[in-house]
Length: 290
Picture 1 (cartoon, helix red, strand yellow):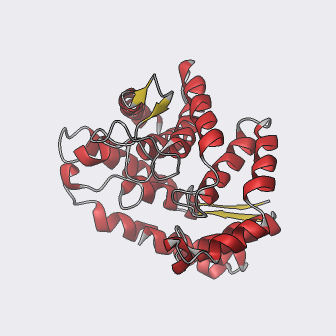
Picture 2 (cartoon, helix red, strand yellow):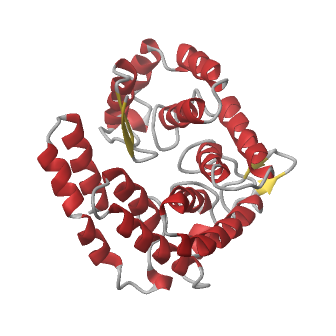
Picture 3 (cartoon, rainbow, N blue to C red):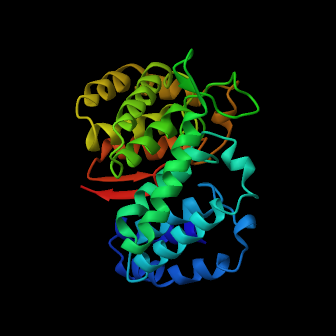
């Protein structure tokens, strides 16, 4: 339901239909009703199918119920992570969609918005998650492997890999005084720039999601990255490249109209670039009007 309400609110804002936005905001408590009675050890916690993703959706939707709902969801997530069991599969992955990085991003984003009385528990959970993330780091590779089951596998995408890790560490750096974190973030950004382009035109684990995250970091964190974004657009994200990828009969991504891994995602990317007055990101679950 959280994704449906996010879509309704975002569409309402795009079309200047206040009624749709208000309807989405008014329905926010229904999302909590769906999950509040689930035991902590059984509560889904990841970004794609769990509380971490719901937190981002409800923050973007906003409205009179947003703050209280975010506080409740944050408490649920912290409690679930402290349960000691039930979330091994998420904690075994370093990435954003299904792993530790997504949890770090969700709690870091929530930290300044929740009541003071919750912040110590959130801070403790974050420190534990960041320590766990560092356990995935391979010093010889200068990168984080994707999964404890495959410590030889290094990805460069939003869902699994350096892109999602860079996004998570960037958010954590904004609420932490740990001087090591910005350096960790910069390592992840470097891996994103060096290895994150020229593979596939998807938001989930390809050039489109990587471009979106790098562009966000250039806007919000490090303006010097704008040159990297421009160079990447000029080399990898040109019309002829899109035409070739869409026409590639050997590519599974050319045969689906999916947003995250198909042609709908390409359309959204191009619209974002053609009209920068509004920006929709399915990887950060945000709508921005500029």
